[in-house]
Image (cartoon, rainbow, N blue to C red; front, side):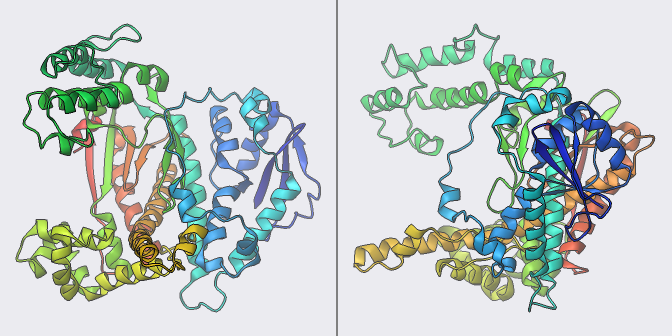
Length: 571
């Protein structure tokens, strides 16, 4: 059963759809539901286990969660449409031809997300009075129904002429996992990361000194500022100003082009140590200091907004709060509630193992049977030197052609021709302006018109620039096939884990909650007595994700698990 939910001037419009996307005979007209009764109606309909169809999960689900309504399944038209618009599997369809295209360069040129104020609390009673919702484009039920039907038509054509590689089934799995990810993101935002404000304040006091008045530096930063002014003979120096700092450094014979740590360390001047200490503490104060704590932590929970598919490879991003960059200095503040534990699990060496599965390299698969893939590779071809094996393999995935990684590449290629050949082929495709695709069907955006024009350049100077741009795109596509497929695996892992945790509930009480996700790492917050069951769920979900993507293959995807009271103890 499919239920389509759309914004309507008088409330919410609800339409029942048959599996094929056409209106159900018993419900030819959409039902309009007032904002006040929406949660109750959705809760009753959820008993029929429908798949909810809406434009964006983030438009609906947070408010429903705030009203105590949790859903099982959805289909996110915006996320799925973005995949279908670019996927190599559907490139021949009318849907893909008519879709607005995002080029690779457009993606790379988007401005970085900056710290934003936290979103206002969800208010179910004022769902359609929210200014943010009023400004968002509204789509009628008919428009959403037509969009869903068009997407299903494109999906149905994904397997045309491509059997037996099951492209349709793989793409269908990706759309389901992406939509599940959107629900998980909303649920994690609603649940929040357990956060102890008093511990965070203790950490800040230990590193920075007492909380300063607004607009003033903390005591330790002020002391370092005084020291730097003396050492650099600059009485009014503001070390937060890059221009002032560079001028002061140059006046003292410290000839650096940037104030990056690696470059500063090349100087032996007495000011370098205090300057590096200042920069480290300044980052903590700016990114996760008292202002951040006031803005982002409420009632013992950090509740950022995750952006599913926020990176072109399918990895998540976050909007405000730096959710995907919790620095080690403050991880001690991420603390389980009394009677609970944090289970922090990460997929060990995920991207290299994904490459083994994609390339079907049987020799590297033998090395991967050990928990430490790099040690296995070192034993097979690098005289037991794990560091060299790791450098060579990561160099192959990321396109390192110079330095130690480049020097080791021939040895890696001789030992593992299938694995190295797989990423090399992806690089050549990218250099030629072609598309590469993840295991489940997420494809690279096409190159921009500017890139294509550069490849048609005539002069020698223009040709050198064109070659450089081609190699850059080749490095991007080389990594995309691996990182994108790893993101596919992680999406399935998350969805499978969510399903298992839901099945473990007793009387509606969760046995464990997903509260954090970062690329190949998950965090589950659970009661002490449920730790064992949650670990089993995490490990079984990881194995299920492997089989969903690759079938029963002789490649292990081990998961490292730590059961801790606070996040800083996990690694």
